[in-house]
Amino acid sequence: MAFDKIRKEYEMHLRSNARNSERTIEAYIADLSHFMQFLDDNSIKNIEGFKTLSKRDILDYMQRFHKLSASTYNRRLSSLKSFYNFLIDYDYIDTEHNCVSGIVSAKQERKIPRALSSEQVQELLKVASKPIISRLKNGKRVYETSKNRDSLSCTERRNRAVIFILFSCGLRASEASTLLLKNIIGEYIIIKGKGNKERKVPLPTPAKKAIERWLSCRSIDSKYVFTMENQDKNISTNTINRIVKKYVNVIGIDQDEISSHIGRKSYATALHKKGVDIRTIQELLGHSDISTTQMYVSVDLLSKDEAVLNLDFFENQ
Picture 1 (spheres, rainbow, N blue to C red):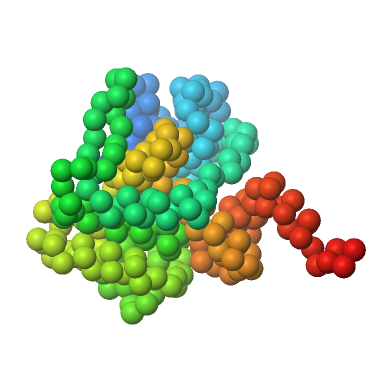
Picture 2: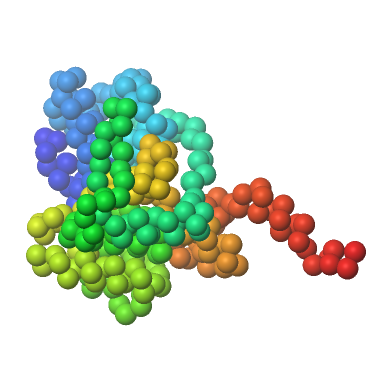
């Protein structure tokens, strides 16, 4: 059987699983296209030829990704395992032809995301309310507030709203990218996160006003909150990352050191320092595993020292 039909069936299979986000589906389909190119390069045109593959062939294929990050390598392997499971479930191949079974994932270090202090977040929100310009400094592009312009352009209003919602609601870039207008309900937003799980998160008034100000100047109607300029198309996660990098650069932080995830980390850390319990923070962030939340709310050593030194036990000693 030709692979075009199998590819279409596999995509339908992925979409039938409510736990798969659109981003996961797109990544798996892209990975499959790459694998199909590998098959074509090796003159494998149909399922019968596919059955001739060995585990050695798959290891050779995966070897070309060894220079990628462990997370990207593991996603490539995960998508391949998903495809093989689909072929077995739909009786295209037998389990004896499952060449990916037993191939182990790359060891992946868990990086603790960086957080901004409350003072830095306050400075960032102030900067996001000002026009931004860029210039080259020592061959590298840097950003700073404009001295020749007071009012924000419509795109800058959008960028400001993005910054406000990331840092005051703890959204992932993918969640902000696909946020729908209908999911802003009063003082809350309904977020569809990983595995298509929904959660309800409070929307602070300044963030809501930032969104309203952006929408008031937008020239097109769209179901999405954050759109490309003059296009009925939601902004990408890459665009959101660039927005965050630009504005943190203005407050003196190297943009190469951070990503849009810094908003979630800063949000979680601020809540934790305000005394919010970790289970509540887990729900607000949409983490399925509380150990992930624990990593997000790790406080610095100084905070721990201060907490111990200020214990009530020692008040009268």
